[in-house]
Image (cartoon, rainbow, N blue to C red; front, top):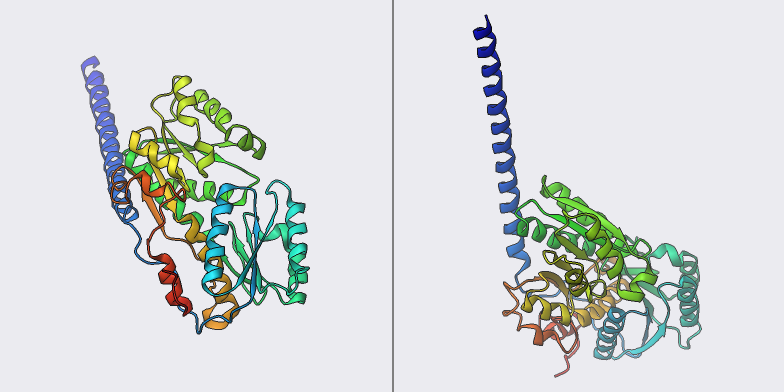
Length: 381
């Protein structure tokens, strides 16, 4: 009797072990398939873009008009503005800048009101970094004045004769998330824990966090994503390094940090090393020259590069197509060419030195000539 009971227990134990082994095998098979899919996507993201995302205008824009660039107090906005200025010169337009502060929404309203006081009135303004909801009250004023608005930030915009177009919005955020999410899955072999820095008061950062979480959740059953909230004050103080290091220290399983902006990673490697966290891989969106130097040195791992100055051409292009209207107006956001930068393709891009002058890799290299052809004007030599 005892022998029979022991035999039954042994059979159950073997069955349970067999089931657990089968379950583990299925899980490993699923993870392997997910990693293989992510690696395939990463190889596409590493390719250097050859064309800009645009279509031809119906005809050459009339010369002598004015575009106003509402410039936020961030280095990326400054470079974006340089591109818009260069594009305006290409079509024979005047270019004016009016500054505002991201952390002070009322300063944007003041800047937008100032633009409407210019004589002659601008054809359109380019607003960078703040979602439409923050200046919704201005739209009616602009409609009455016959002045257009191009929005360059996260979210969605329903384009019309006043809201002419938008760049680097919902599609852009998801493209960033897909590049970084798939890289994280592939690099961690489907078992990493990523801590993503997020700035709740910045629309793009909040959108990218949501998109990154969605990409990883869908593409990796064994990966983990957590967040650390960083205020604009903390970002201005130390780039958000202190709260990030604290979050990493609080959870030993974290082995990746994802930054939504390059300034959030400045000094992060050194701070993590000082804290004894030397196994953390750093990646992010909107890489700059310093990040590419760090990739070459092995202290950072991957950054999504967007052509910073070409981004200003995109803003102008969205406005020009909006003015053309009808089938020429973009119904969704358009973006500067994106490329994922790692050690694998860094040399092909010309190495960090190629990004030193403007802070980012300006690809494709002939983008001014491409836009000139699409706008029916002669490119500067």
